[in-house]
Image (cartoon, rainbow, N blue to C red; front, side, top):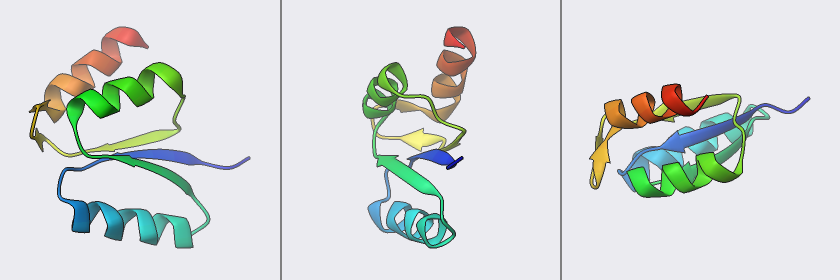
Length: 72
């Protein structure tokens, strides 16, 4: 079974670095850069793990965690 991780990070170079490292380790990654993009992905897909930046340009990572806890 393949592990799928959602990376929510607005700093694109950091996001790319995280995704590259995880992909090289055999993990499938999806990356998004905003709160709203993360909410859209979470509505459509199921992830084994989510890496969330606290300071996103259109919302808080803490609010995203609260959203996830309410939905799942």
